[in-house]
Length: 86
Image 1 (cartoon, rainbow, N blue to C red):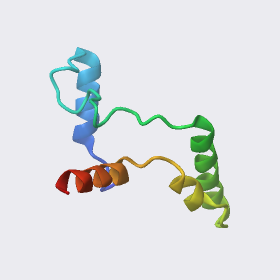
Image 2 (spheres, rainbow, N blue to C red; image 1 turned 45 degrees about the horizontal axis):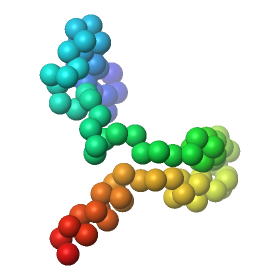
Image 3 (cartoon, helix red, strand yellow; image 1 turned 90 degrees about the horizontal axis):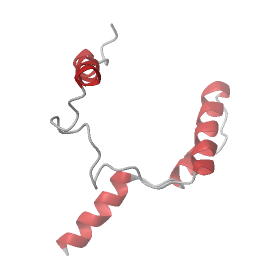
């Protein structure tokens, strides 16, 4: 098994799927901080295509620029933290 795999995460996922005890385990249900960010599907498809093209060809296809156009939960949370601290 590769070093970066987490078998305990897969075991927890499998157990949850079998028992359907999702509400009792934190982290398995989206809340306001983890709910999906509305994003244009075309923009996500474009970014994913460019990432795959760069990986396959080794050439620049503009993946970084396409990714930068997508919403980023981490960046958004940092901006929110700055406003709260002010």
